[in-house]
Amino acid sequence: RFTFVTKSKSVTTMAAVQEYPGNLKRQVEKLFDASLRSTVPDETGVETEVTASLPGKPGDYQCNNAMGLWSIIKGKGTQFKGPPAVGQALLKNLPASEMVESCSVAGPGFVNVILSSKWMAKSIETMLIDGIDTWAPSLPVKRAVVDFSSPNIAKEMHVGHLRSTIIGDTLARMLEYSKVEVLRRNHVGDWGTQFGMLIEYLFEKFPDTESVTETAIGDLQSFYKESKSKFDADPEFKEKAQKAVVRLQGGDAIYRKAWTKICDISRAEFAKVYQRLRVELEEKGESFYNPYIAKVIEELNSKGLIEESEGARVIFLEGFNIPLMVVKSDGGFNYASTDLTALWYRLNEEKAEWIVYVTDVGQQQHFSMFFKAARKAGWLPESDKAYPRVDHVGFGLVKEEDGKRFRTRSSEVVRLVDLLDEAKTRSKTALLERGKDKEWTPEELDQTAEAVGYGAVKYADLKNNRSTSYTFNFDQMLSDKGNTAVYLLYAHARICSIIRKSGKVIDELKKTGKLALDHPEERALGLHLLRFAETVEAACANLLPHALCEYLYELSERYTSFYSVHQVIGSAEEASRLLLCEATAIVMRKCFHLLGITPVYKI
Ligand code: ARG
Image (cartoon, rainbow, N blue to C red; front, side, top):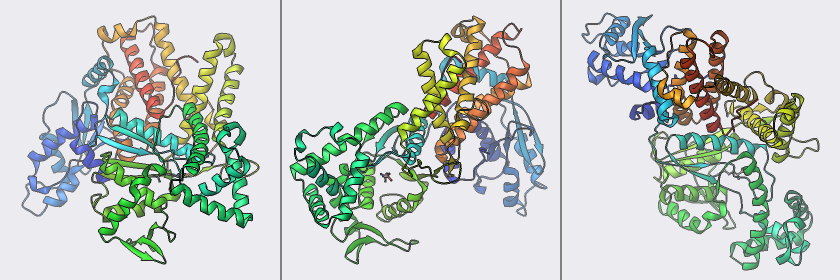
């Protein structure tokens, strides 16, 4: 279960320097900052520690510093008798603030804060007028690179790339919302020895290479397999392929052209997936960095990092039992040399302060190693939490019911487009079963089926902690019950329909109406709305999108608790409750947006 309590220094540092109106936790923390300073001497060097209280506990936020402070000041002539007394002093020294309703000290010295419902209502009203973007977090970086999706030319995009695409897009969206300029990079595998074999096979199959079309080649994945079989079986072909690599890398025009052709066909296939998922990416494939590699390797060499080992050139790194190879024994460059060069480029040419790489956890060692090499070269600070900073965002496998890796019956990797098609078809069938074709236009039906189907695939992926593997199950992800996109999209649509049915012009109501959080269910919902910004901030800081899914699901649950006991339309509190409905719908839509899910307004 996600809580804001995190001991990670990165988050503390991040929060400690950033202030913005949306961050409720930070605002409470500021009050305690002041109280801490007047309670104990500055030299304790203790950082204020405020956490959101768990449901069912007294208070909305809690300051946990009393025990820690006590262990530092005891026996040093302090007037306090123990942690509870420190807690009492923290409470007494809290500056007066309209946001606080009351405080109390509990147990060994926790200071509980109950926020003022009036103040909370006012904050939500302000957001309704000024817009949800005023709640956007601010992070200590201006520009970031998110390296994601990154499939390989002539190979099918598989579910692993789907995960990278979905997780990377969400991270990019969350950072963008937090006013970070994001360079969305598709580090396509468009270079390497396999191209020799592909090009040679292309020449053989289509002697008139100039005029060969996309349709003639057809399925590139099969083309890849055919050429690979030939490569393995035919030594003459193998030799030709090896020579082709040299000619391609030497810049031979005819080989370059053939290479471009193969890349273009793959690219068109990838584009279809991105278009369906509505994911934007800028391709800077491995080949983009070719012109810089030699220079970068030379720089590493001049810094004394590179050594000879069995004909290859490598970097030895502490803590790893194998060295990082940066130049192969045949003089060619590899995945690591390209990644080192891309990092150099992103830091120096693109001036990125935070670079995150989204791939399966299987590549973790590769990333740890080249990050370490970059630190050794002095490109990055010693501390992995300081900026400029790099992070590998690793994710687990997608599995089938039987716990095996996700494969089709013929044990091929599952084609991404087929998955998306099926999700859409299934959600359309469900809509037809409910007779929606009689109520809606064909376009509405199609758009809803797509939003729900693709949204379900994305959400099923994002709601799990990314580092764990998850089981792909259409029935589960397309269910309208439980923590699914379908359930959440419908919850949002129902709120919209309540507002529509009220007959009130909501934009007018925002200006004239008053919001009140007098009842416990209204207050609990309001408090959760106000925790939106700190949730996004933590999800960014920890690079964990599932925190936002948990937030969203909890939001819909709190809404349900509110709606099931309080009448909205026709009640004495109608205006206030409609505003609360609207605020909930706005925050839900922002969550959908950040998760890359298209909201629906009718069900
Ligand atoms: N093309 C690689 C793969 O499919 C992923 C590349 C990830 N990005 C990077 N900079 N290494 O496994």
